[in-house]
Image (cartoon, rainbow, N blue to C red; front, side, top):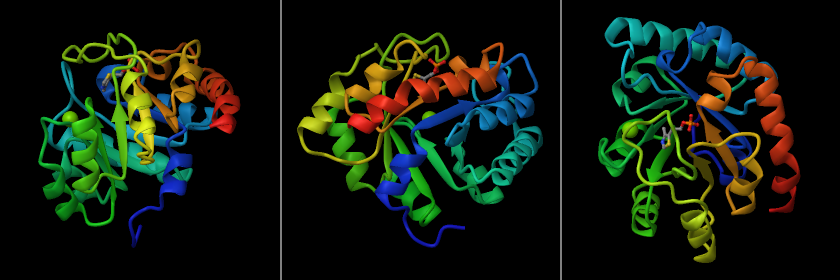
Length: 224
Ligand code: TZP
Ligand code: MG
């Protein structure tokens, strides 16, 4: 396990192709989808068991443990969305919280040096999250998304560009409606990576989709 806060350069690399999924995001077995996505080249995984049809309690924990084991088998860090108790119970590699979840500084206290990601929608939220101990930020929705019913209005690259203009260099991933067609736009705005659900979880071949996404961001990433 990590014994110090993850260095930014290492995290930037991990954020390149950040796949997020819960069992509610796929008609297939989520273990199969994750295994394929790993083979296709994802660099980080977030377990986000949330919304209609999501598992709870023991079933949720069991799924988390089996997906974490798949990640461990391939050296992919495993992040838990929202559920800090679960992340601590299973000794996940990190957590991701939004503005409506537990207070960021309190989460940092609870998780020690585990990776801490925070969703931010304004420059003020960005600055507060950094102050409170975020390791990386998720910014979006960049494009319209059908996956998160309560998502805010799509903001394109406005906030990512504003953050970089302020010379704030915290690792950032864009989120929301990202596909192979628009992935390079997100990287060109100054993000270190793309995070996505349906472009991989709903793909006919999660493996091919992951490969294609990675190919589309390699050139723009090299130019950042
Ligand atoms: N937060 C902002 S948009 C979103 C989340 C969790 C959903 C992203 O899903 P998709 O399918 O990649 O648009
Ligand atoms: Mg949340």
